[in-house]
Image 1 (spheres, rainbow, N blue to C red):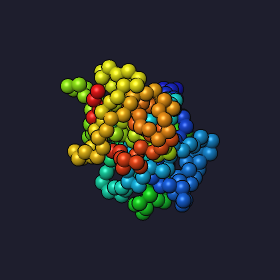
Image 2 (image 1 turned 45 degrees about the vertical axis):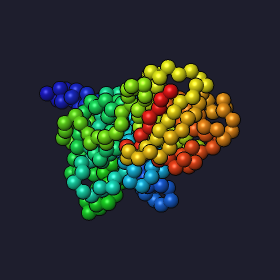
Image 3 (image 1 turned 30 degrees about the vertical axis):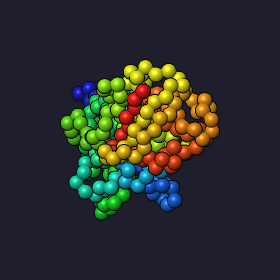
Image 4 (image 1 turned 135 degrees about the vertical axis):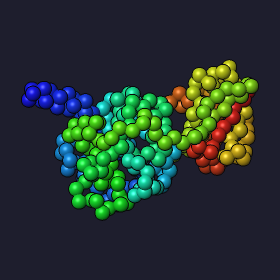
Length: 293
């Protein structure tokens, strides 16, 4: 019986991620919040490798948190544990969960829409609710506004270090998470429709969710002109014609272009300029784009 029990324990530990821990939040780095999360993680497992995805998500912007996770996760090895804390509902009845994707990655987050993009792109293998009676920083029971430190960093570190298995996170839930509705890419009647999912914050480029396969249904060649219409919640913000090229330097400085970005999706830019600032464009579920020849 002892040998069987030992074998079961070893199998359980083998199923643990034992991978790096990657942190994301909207906390910024001007105060001690991020350092406190890292301190909890290192206290749990001093040998644990802890990395930052970003802590510059705009405050309360669940949509951007979702997209940044999806942009990044596929480049990390299976077993990586991501902790994402963009949590305007902290302390309320929203669930605290760990999502295991079919790719073998783990995401620790409030179930508030943050997991939309990774659930779609990496697939849902299983979801468990964090049992805070065992997976919570000791003596933090009276803290209701910093679950990033008290619950998510603590649970994520224990999971990444192999101290707990995924099954020990807490009870299994239905294999679904809260999803943010948005415009999926599609081709219809000679036009391509999509969503402006994110901005390139450094350069102001517009990144859409329109993949290469959908875009190529327009049968364009480099140098061809395309028409774009950008709207917010149904109201047109920008309507113009611009050329399709492979890269920025194929147009003069200050000129606009459409290109396929490093994620192989349609994007808009001004060569050596800022498209988003120039045309007052944002991103999110309400920002959509139409493209035609």
